[in-house]
Length: 348
Image 1: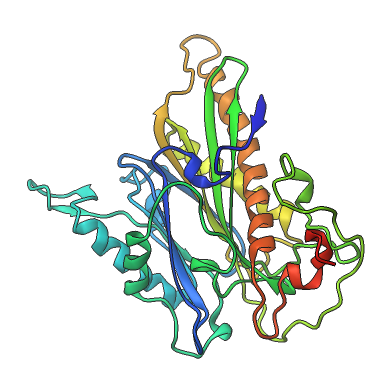
Image 2 (image 1 turned 180 degrees about the horizontal axis):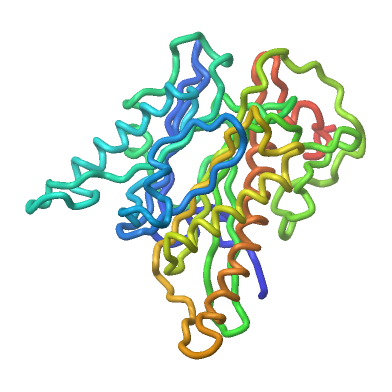
């Protein structure tokens, strides 16, 4: 397969996928919500690792269960409290009669909104965390094209090891040997308990997966960082979404999510700890059918394309994590990458 990034290097390069952020960062606040809105009929899957998950509607996405399609994915700060943001997403979708049909009228639907949260409660005043208004506002802000990155949306209060974390996104255009062309995109909320930078050099662990100078770095520092990180809890979690414009089953979506989790392991060390609740959702919009064949080898052609998509998902998710780290801004007692290593951007 040959690869390159999409026009916006974002999950929105997958046609029909929209992203919206809402956050509050004034005094006493440092949290937010990010919503990924796929086209109607999008099939979903999920993979959850780590010992401290905060999730909603993940069992529904198990391949043997009833519902296959997803109307939105809600990613939020606020730990388990932040799952309330998904209520606002459901209300927004309900107002548009979008959801799983349960009755005769167009309004008789139940929106399917899987959700996951990060632990960022110490960043602001206790009690200041996302609620349903955050989810609704993020839906209102959802758009295609370039996606805001860094300390926005669900990444407003994120911490990546000893540094400020944030939201990052990336994409990869994939062309298989049979000429099938697909786009894989990822959006990650980087809030890992593990470190995401090599301690002796300042180079992000996943920097080697960058395409065509995408990280905007003139040179990696080559030195250890000098900073004092805030003390406190190591209850963290990296969450996100990987999307593709292929027609996949729920089981194939789960396989895509499993592969994207490898991207977390490429970018954060250690990953999937007892103090992380790492969760990745997968979305398949169904725009392009995979090559399927009957006969002794069955769907071997489709399996080969899916395998290529899974490899891309790991790379794209890792690259999205690097973007989230590099785009983050500093917070009191929690430095950003750019503050510690300004020379990476030609400022030191």
